[in-house]
Image (tube, rainbow, N blue to C red):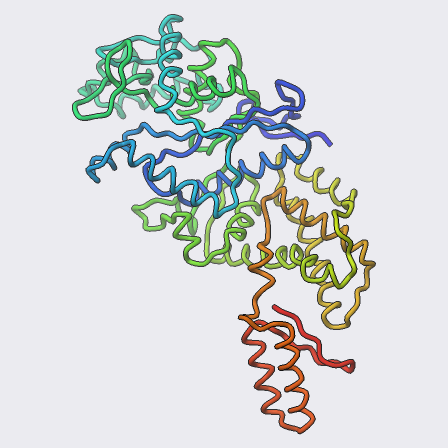
Amino acid sequence: MTLTLYNTLTRRQEPFETVEPGKVKMYYCGVTVYDYCHLGHARACIVWDVIRRYLQFIGYEVRYIQNFTDIDDKILNRACAEHSSMEAVADRFIKAYFEDMARLGIKEADEYPRATHTMNGIQRLIHELENKGFAYPADGDVYYAVRQFAEYGKLSGRKLEDMQAGKSERVNIEDPEYQKKKDPFDFALWKAAKPGEPAWESPWGAGRPGWHIECSAMVRDRLGDTIDIHAGGADLIFPHHENEIAQSEAVTGKPLARYWLHNGMVKVDGEKMSKSLGNFTTIRDLLDRGVDPMAVRLFVLTAQYRTPIDFTDEAIAAATNGWHTIKEGLLFGYQYGKKLGWGVGTASLLAETVERFQETINNDFNFPGGLTVLFELAKELRREGNIIVHEGKTETSPDELQRQWQTLVTLAGVLGLEAEIEAETDKSDGLSDAEIEAKIQQRQEARKGKNFAESDRIRDELQAQGITLIDSRDGTRWHRN
């Protein structure tokens, strides 16, 4: 069962082979911290979180780095509008990022480098590019000479000659930055400071780095010259990731990454998500409306990670129903394990089920296929739970049920799907088991006295508090919903 994945760079699915056997160096281009995270960020962070979890599950030691872009025009504009500072804005939304991701069950990265904390590495990389003839200074700015890098365009598949055709219509030749460039395709590595802007001292004068050079420097500083996986949204393929390759490989002469992975975009009711269309939804807005974070995670995993995904009310409702099914299975052991006489400790997993799960996901991280395995386990456990409630026994041996449950819990954990035990098993609004039994006795006495109205009232009262009664020839059983 070899893991194969689609590599954007080669445009084909390839066996996964790491630079160092058994170890994975993985970098995800994180968020620009000028606002709250939205559904697009949720999808990306869930996808890379699950890929990291899965790599660890199949035995890899993963070093996972995710950056924060904390130097950017958007951050600066927000700071100006709020009469604040770029640092204060960045700090506020980094804090919000961690709050949102914790609610979604995202595991923290091993390290979160920030552009402002990588200034020495950024300037060192620019200096090396300049020495090798790939960069040139211009009145306080420094630009990358795109035509000097012969392989420019290899990630995106774009050719300079094809892009040249419409380039003259898109640029403003009166723009001072344009006039500084030797070629219209050249891009800024360092920008000279403008009055009132934050700036850092450099050999080229006070200024700040361009966006692309920040990630090249952070990858190199934290993970070295060549990493295994470089991840990000499909919207970053060009120009950001293309420019990263040009910068890094021009200096090192080595591949920046063996595999380039990109997640698809999120649409809302078929439209591109944007504030101007009024369909812009932040993670916290969605969760504050009562949508279960696990339903959001399930929604993301029901689509192949590279394809676009459409967020609709119907889709999130379907994901919520799906989560309820898996959640019932995950809670089975806590609800019925003691009654079934399960011992303390972890049961062995169902080897064939785990093998099928891995074989499915090893095909380019096919998480929708992996979910199919989870649903099969969860539905079987739900069926057995209903039998226990109605008949007081099971059709399957307790040992086998424990293995099924343990397998579900383990594989669901790989996908980051976890049920909160206390919240889900204590829904009685304060009614203890003894109080419920007393209510049932009152109902039995009402039925014996043919006071069916009182009997129905007690049943409805318990139902309203999440307790269902099942009448049978053997008496009345009950369970919490």
